[in-house]
Image 1 (cartoon, rainbow over the protein chains, first blue to last red):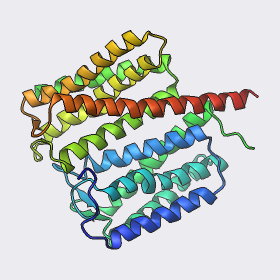
Image 2 (spheres, one colour):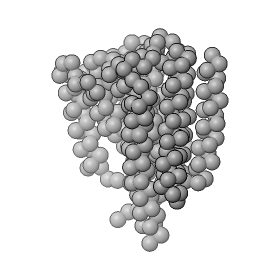
Image 3 (tube, rainbow over the protein chains, first blue to last red):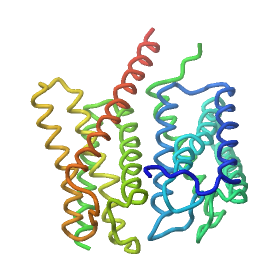
Amino acid sequence: MILPLPEKFDANEIFIIFSTIITLFLVYKSPKHLSAVTLIIIWTFNVFLALLADITIGIKPYNFYSTIDHTKHELFDVLLHFITYPTLPYFVVNFYQHKKPNGIKLLSYIIFWAGIAISIEWISLKFHVFTYTGWKLYLSFFVYIVVFAANIWLSNFIEKRHPYERT
Amino acid sequence: MKHLWLFILLAILSFSSLYILMKKMNITNVLGCYFFSNVLITNTGVIINLNLKLTKQDPTSTLIFWTQKFPELSLKPALLLWLIYILFSKRSIFSKLILLFIFLTALISSEIYFVHIGYLEWVNWNVFYSYLRYSLIILLLAIYSFYLEKLINRNKEVNTI
């Protein structure tokens, strides 16, 4: 099968569906501070990063963790990569562009969101969305700091060229 | 190990060529297309290799893994991006078709090379399927690039008004 369905429809699939619906609802409801161009670039960038991580350290020869039920790339993996993962960096960038903190405030802002991200990751571990086979939660914290910093840099780069216009 | 060095060298050349492309194409479009081409290459690659098991490779070798990973992140996206640039340029349809075939062949050549050196095994896979795979990737990437460019231009118009 091109994209296999879950072996068992259990807690992890339900968690993915619920978290996807909730985050999409929040994306829809939250005030927008990004241009459409920035939104698309940021979204694509995060799909790219999610896939890069999962298909580099999440598979053999490294196999530091696995997602959902098995080692195959299943339908719910696609949902995770394309919809669930990019929503959090979207919020990070969206609210950053509104207040534009800098210096120590920016560092605190990134650490705050990295804290939220590992909290969500900890919950998803309980629901077996991820199974660590060598990876550690604290490593994710450092990864999120780098990822969110890269997202903020990229959003500034794009917004400078294609700024958000208030209507 | 020499194969890995060859692809590291090609990666440097690819990224240098992308720098040149950024001066010819809209930089935002180049970035978006680079990310999206990676998404397409990885997704189709994983489906073919992990899910459908049409190709096989030694899963324990880090050398094989990285030798294939480097062109996936550099050479292949660079070729695809240059092809997108050519397809949206003011060349004749005939020259575009010839260049399309040349670039597709170049993309597939790297895979044939991996098969030749024993880093990849084609179980139920062949060159024709590879042409189909990359044609699909180019089609999806062209659609993405077209609409992103449209959005960029609309954004520019709004800002000038």
